[in-house]
Length: 131
Image 1: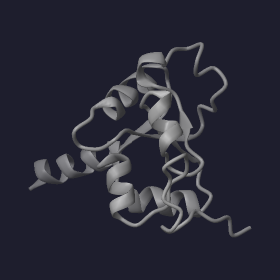
Image 2: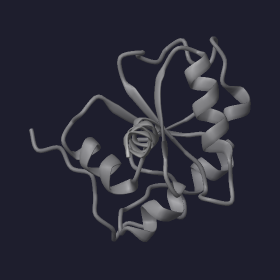
Image 3: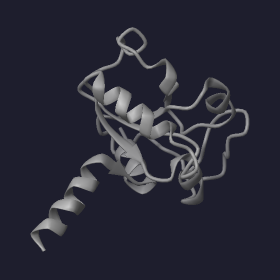
Image 4: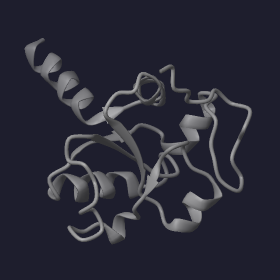
C-alpha cells in the first residue's frame, strides 16, 4: 500500500487537471498557464491569461523574463499531443517549477471553461479577479 500511496503522490506532484488550474488562477495563486504549442495554435485559441512559448523555442534566452517563483502549467491540444510534456521537460531543465495540464485545452473546454483567441469560446466559466 505504501508504494501505491507514493505513486499517486508522485503523479499529483507533476500533473494538474483543468479544475485545479481554474481554481488556482481564480484564487490568485502564483501559477501561470503556458501554452507549449506553436504560435498559430495559441492565436486561434488559448486559456485566458496564458503565455505562449512553443516547446521547440524554449531556451534560457526565451525564458529569461519569466519569474522562477511561479508554477508554470504547460498545456497543448490534448491527449493526442505531447507538446505539453516536451514543454514541461524543457522548462524543468531550465530551472522552473512545472506541472502538466491533464487533457490540454480540449479538456479545459470539456470542463466548461472559457478560452480566448480568434476561435475562443466566450461562453464558458471565466477567470475573474476577486480583489
